[in-house]
Amino acid sequence: MILEIVKYGTPVLRQKGRPVGQITGEIRALAADMIETMREANGVGLAAQQVGVAAQLTVLEVEDTDDRPSTMSIAGKQVNLADYMPMVLVDPVLEVGKEKEDGTEGCLSFPEITAEIERSSWVKAKARLLDGRHIEFEATGLLARALQHETDHLNGILFIDRMKTATKIALKGKLKRLQRETQEG
Ligand code: ZN
Image (cartoon, rainbow, N blue to C red; front, side):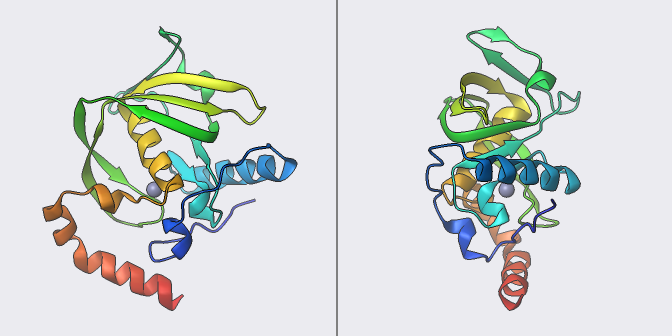
């Protein structure tokens, strides 16, 4: 089922997600709907908050494309990204590296807005998969960026909070308009 993606100005986007804990049938159904919704919107990630649920649950689908490559490693060994996609992460925790890089980001809750955002170029993620198994992996490139963007959502943090001041000033009018449109429904 395709869900409605809430836009900037919707209060749930600012809520920290509650831990999922036990993975119920309801959670599995929500994750399946989130994957369908993310694909339909051509996104690389979608957080539960973006479909109106404040929970520590996110879905990702990053492909190893040439222009924005990614790597994923488990226990120091590089794995094939496609084997893990689409990925559902339950209660994820991120460790981020010191080295940073700029990259273009968009967000399905901010239609038509993109900006250069500085993120760590390396992350380590610990989470559970939908079947309850624990996973721990390292990522670089677009996957590292997407993981940081999505786990931010799970904590009520939006990419506008990470923008350089000049960028945010330049987008001020657009952001105000979007917020107003959302609030007027
Ligand atoms: Zn987003």
